[in-house]
Length: 502
Image (tube, rainbow, N blue to C red; front, side, top):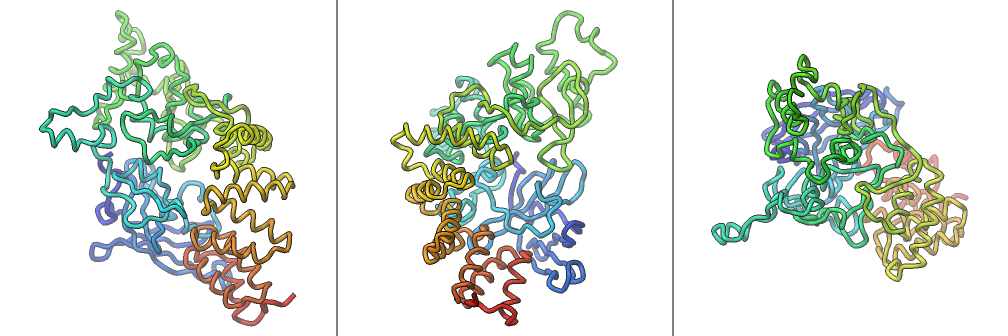
């Protein structure tokens, strides 16, 4: 964990990788202590307008390299991850997760505050207009320091040890477990409690006061997630039999891992601490001391390429086949936590965006109920933005517009609400208002390429040639491989398209 992040030069791994789907050739090189990502693609790969060339200075690395590594770069105060990742198990460079088949270079992958919270120390709070926009450096120190698990030691040091550090093992179980789970629990989806931010979590807090995690009730163990095994462990006979006595540190030492040659014996002793009946070790497969080989499958991960899952369901017999992914059904909270209609509704809304149509219906019911019953709902931009989206896809544009306006009253920078409201305003021929909304989105969040393209199309239709080109130029500064934006700009500059022509 101490090596989980740091200056790019300290974590330099050279890369020379051609992505076949997009034809982009990526390199990561070091020059005089500075690390660079360069990318290029010849025009012949995708036609005359398909050429691409550029580079970005990489400022920090994220990931120790044992499982993987990526790099961060900054552009105009916005922080992004590189499009390529190092995958430590296979020792290969490949595209970032979810982009293995991308036809265009994804250069606008925003750095998520939750990522920094778990890989660095002293993570800064993002500015209110975008989750990856920071006033200065995104974190204070590389790696995970002692304070991440043990709390701020300032008072302990200042008092010469008279003020004691928190005793993690003496905390009530949910707060003890939260120390690990705030970085090692994902679920199918996480929903932030109203007014709470996960980056404000501190050791000794109850994680579930900040975030609720949801899974489908019919999910298989961990659902094949590489870094989230608590939900699988909760279903195991080991956890059900041991209760609160069994926690992450029962088997894992957070300060280090056993050497590869000692790993089998180390974890076998962890198992035998409970399975310790007389003669058990001699009777139970003494010829194969690796308990995990039979009881903890290592199938391929469903969410990270080139990675495996050590499934903590801990069953009698397992196989190495990929775990089926649950994509629909009834959602339930991890750990049987109580969820409000608002929180459950937002969880279903997120699953609806992944293709679960029934989840959209359930989300609408729950969020409408929460809106009607809660006096505080008026200030809940997430609730209103999601309700607006659900109303819009159902064709109820008047109701959607009202929800989006309520969302923007609560958070003027809500890009989902502003961008989708602009679409409604254009269809109502309120072009001036649509332009205002889209300009606000693109000014504050340059990752919103769809909003920028919509803005450019409407600006051109209104005869605003210079504004159109300015919008397209800004879009391409952040997303230089956006083919539509590039062609649109070339058509205007060459005269093949005239702005204002109806």
